[in-house]
Length: 53
Image (cartoon, rainbow, N blue to C red; front, side):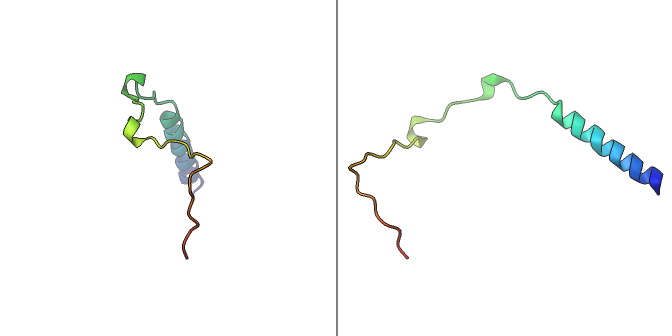
């Protein structure tokens, strides 16, 4: 029983270490959000509706 637990802990630790050391994707795959997806900041003079409910 102790060997099984020790083996499970060892394998779990090895798996987590392998995942943590995995190389991230190349930076060329990262894209900036499109301008249509961005929201402009609110102006102080805009009307803001109170939540209904």
